[in-house]
Length: 233
Image (cartoon, rainbow, N blue to C red; front, side, top):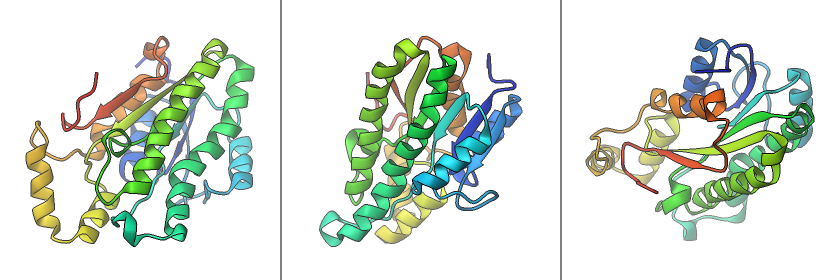
């Protein structure tokens, strides 16, 4: 894709799953990738504003930001408590805010940049057992649209990618927590028109397109990569 070679991209949660697939694809395209993750070197907690500030400063000028880090656990809302809510909010929403607040000023000063926020179709249509996670991902979608409006004239483009059901460690833990994971996996498979769950490698194409020069006239958009499970437009 045009315009990725030689660019510097920050990818949060890039040590495994969808994040690792995104990192690998950026590197294939010749980009320099800085991975911010609790697992890996350097170890960065994205919920810590000062730690994020230092990591962004150390990265140098950032051309592309992918807010990918996330966490959830299957729990009906009435069985949760404020400490559980705060953990989900800190990782899935506050972490992205911390990155945006530290990366966007440099993009504005340099007259351009690309942000791709990884949300979820749970934030578009809801998901049983994921009330707070869905709220965070819906917030990511709304925040992306708002910032896209605020920064369009500054040359900064922001868009959202919403993976559907994707075979990651988080999904596996979610299904185990829900009980009877084999039955649930088959139910998911049957619900997806393409006939299978997503794989981490299904996501980077959309992300890198939105980060590339080919998407210079696209901002404030939300794209689902879900095998047709959800269809919007």
